[in-house]
Image (cartoon, rainbow, N blue to C red; front, top):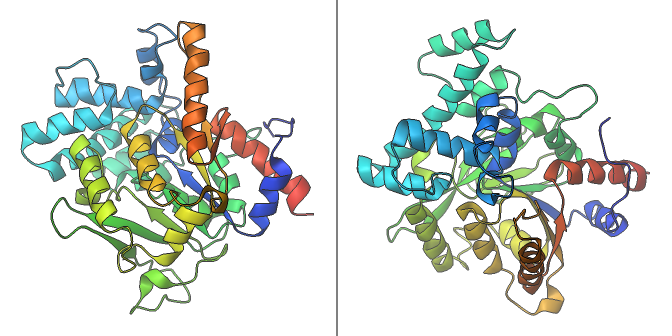
Length: 372
């Protein structure tokens, strides 16, 4: 098993809070995309065009955006790695925000199928998926292809996370990868997602019924069921792929989301009480975010609205971050110090390591310190 053997210094305290169900993972969109497209050499080759210290092209998610911007959108500016800005441009050009989002999802599917068409053992599956009408949504394509693939020596970190005794997961992903991992380990997740608009209607949280769910959730108040580790809830804060209009993707989308969520902050008809409790009083675990990206900036601002009370009543949380890699190492140290102080203001401790490594260490700690 390819995991780090060194124990992280905050393990014992963290495991204690896993036992009391006081930990809530908050998982990025990029985390799974990076694993799904990891074997695509074209995406890795993009980064070779830039010096190693360029922090804006370090993730596959950013490289996918560059490819979309160049080959589909025709984006004319230099920040083509920034999905929110590329999406903003495309929505204006098309004069159709939902179509721009749908085309992004189509691009992800085309890129995935185009690469695996030429990989040994995948051609037949790719051809079958291409013949289906309508084509399955992106997360279904990923599932049908059995992706991402991991060797026997390296376990899937999302499955390890799903095995922990957690009743709630929050994500900014548009895709159902967390639900898939939870089902694979024998749990019965419930999907809830934001249905938002820029108008006066504000934001609503919608329940996604699962025909396989047993026992059925009461239809009169489907959002208010009691989540458990065996029946966890997954909140998609930035929308979901098969309701493309709900996806928070462009700069305007993020601004509208923040403004509307601020208006609905105390409205329990919109934001379930369990989610409010998690945002304000649980130990959040931010996983897979890249600090300059809009999804992180909007998410952190959204979270901070619920964690702005008396600091002594707000439990410390953790943000797992990829360390900034700058050409000037003095500037790099200054950046690290600044970011740590910024997070500390909201009672977040920063751990500078890769998300997969953290999950492997946490899973090891749970097995050795928690289960026993």
